[in-house]
Image 1 (cartoon, rainbow, N blue to C red):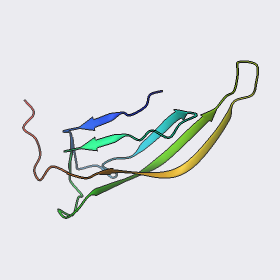
Image 2 (cartoon, rainbow, N blue to C red):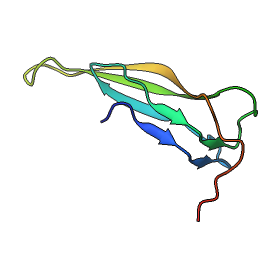
Image 3 (spheres, one colour):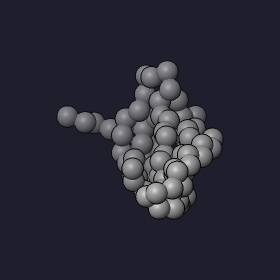
Length: 88
């Protein structure tokens, strides 16, 4: 589990779903950072929207039950790459 994951400069294309996520957070709502990824199904205009789920794990202490709350959530790459990266 982590917070503020960075998804940066990847080639994501030729998949039935090019990108999705399940973000697990413990008592917080810190977002993932998507930046400069090439996404084959991006329209070429504006941001790229990635659909996924946010899972909040609520635990008060080690003796209490853990509550899992699931939400449909969106992440955005506000500056997607125009072309695939040359990855050797």
